[in-house]
Length: 139
Image (cartoon, rainbow, N blue to C red; front, top):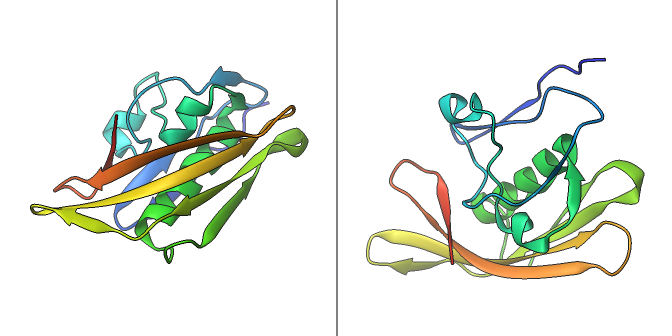
């Protein structure tokens, strides 16, 4: 059964969640997963810091994880946990630190703890805002 596509808007950016139910993908692509509608139309789904946790997530779980990363980077106070919950008890917490400026670019370190059965996976990174408002994960 097809689920309706979920479009999450935040400050003019859109994140397109997967449209098929029951599908699963490994979060393994690079870049932060805040796609524009044109980029979301491609077959791959970009992933943010959650991709480094090397866990198996469904498309809807990946969309929830990426939305939590975006909320943490865009609007959360430093140290404020942003929770997301997926299927079968999988979920996570994103915590962004104080933003800082490098030249004309705003950057923000953050961590993402993913609970997907077994030990929690914790990953850390820094993302910087691009001129178009999207975020790029630095690695």
